[in-house]
Image 1 (cartoon, one colour):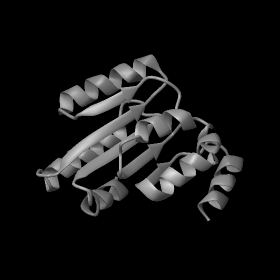
Image 2 (cartoon, one colour; image 1 turned 30 degrees about the vertical axis):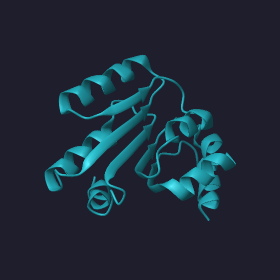
Image 3 (cartoon, helix red, strand yellow; image 1 turned 60 degrees about the horizontal axis):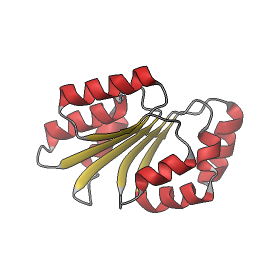
Length: 143
């Protein structure tokens, strides 16, 4: 949570705070970040984007965002490179990207098109890896 708070204070350089979750579950990171943003900088606009394959979790995202009055877009599907790139179309800057896609992180982050978008348009990434091998590969990717 400390990292999220710190990032909220130093983000939204482009007028709107944007957060995306790939493997959203119920939208934990976005809900917390936007709730904190509203408390410290209520004048800043915000948007949330979610990709989640489990139907039950998609329902939870809808419920949590509705209860908190958060504008959002939700895709109920697997987070593939293609889906991520589609979600990023028209977005010039993403303040926070949370990725927890149960072992598919390697496929996402090693896609050269995704890597280019991440480097140019994403300020901070919170990444959950699900094996030492994936973790090692992504540490090398980061450079």
